[in-house]
Length: 244
Ligand SMILES: [Zn+2]
Image (cartoon, rainbow, N blue to C red; front, side):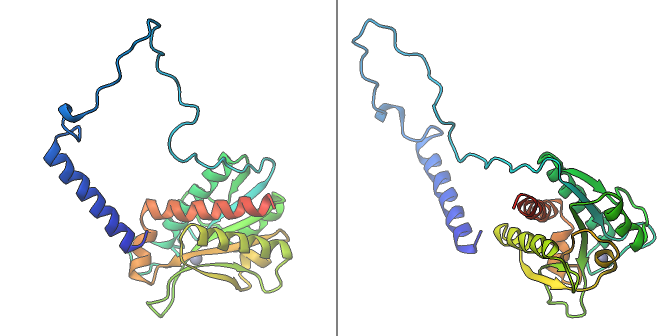
């Protein structure tokens, strides 16, 4: 939400509060309320009917991907904290929190999810990659958070290897699109031969969810609310890729 619309909403809320103060909790005074028309018929008035459409916008039905097998790799763990950044939370905890949220959302959509780690444990890079091959994953998704010397660097990047398959590239593009749709800053698709992308033969992406070297992004990435937004976008992108 932009500042101006937030300000408009705040003004609208403030207006509503003032109206409440001057006219009582119910809004208009009772004496001014129009009376219902007298009932002339002897028939009983109709009872309350259920609305044909529930009020409010309907949540979009979840696109389901039953049968898809997704391996989620929470970066670092155990003796390897990952980037320490400028925030209070090490990368290994942020990656696990986001990975768990992604897994939960994918399972809701019918996917089979394998977590490389689901606790504070150390797994070698080749050990992580081996899970992709062993599980014959439809997609391997490694979750990380970035760090840079330049403290102003921000935004999520989705990496594929330099000689990525069209499948890996398509998955990365779908996740980037989902970040944009979810209002999460993204630097787009990057290319790098990360070990967890080149040491197996399955489609794979590595998501750097933002920069822990930037104070604002480190703070956001340490909150459950932002982790959930990032996870929602990653899950949306994975579903869009599998269901393409
Ligand atoms: Zn990392």
